[in-house]
Amino acid sequence: MPTILIVYHSKTGNTEEMAKVVAEGAASTGVKVIRKKVQKATMQDLLKADGIILGSPTYYGSMAAEMKAFIDRSVSYHGKLEGKVGGAFASGGGLGGGVETTVLDLTKALLIHGMIVQGDPWGSHYGTVSIGKPNASAKKECKKLGEKVAGLVNRLAQAS
Ligand SMILES: Cc1cc2nc3c(=O)[nH]c(=O)nc-3n(C[C@H](O)[C@H](O)[C@H](O)COP(=O)(O)O)c2cc1C
Image (cartoon, rainbow, N blue to C red):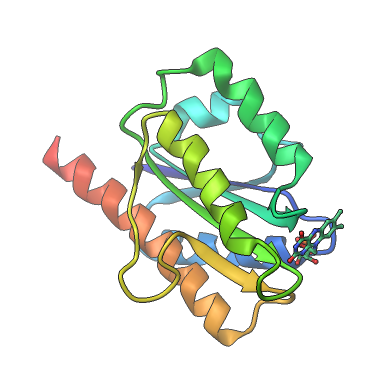
């Protein structure tokens, strides 16, 4: 059974709420889902996963330092994550506060690892974003992110 790993940082709970709904969306497709705060996630978790979804609050227009440190540590496995499916989500304090630049920064790291990231022509184009405590519409997007990443992982697993 394919595995989706969700790694996130959250200090006041908003990104964590998003992570829980992303996990629900992924699990609804029948994959195994592992959801970990970044402090608990390991490089082995990255290697074992078929899909990796990263989430962070927006701090000064980019990801939290904890997420950046985790990504920087993954350089030891540079090249080993190639071909895995990726996705990203971010929480911010206000519109125009940099939530999209945060989600793009997370996505850049996934792309640099050689991962496959699907865009979205309808909702959050670059990755799922939310302001403050996620409302119903943000949660719908979070669920969709989980479903999309897991759906692509399942399709690739069937094709190989
Ligand atoms: C150090 C710090 C920097 C922040 N910088 C920004 C920012 O640049 N733009 C923004 O929209 N929100 C900013 N925020 C607000 C958080 O992104 C927002 O409250 C988020 O929902 C927190 O997520 P969490 O509840 O998962 O910790 C900042 C918060 C902190 C603590």
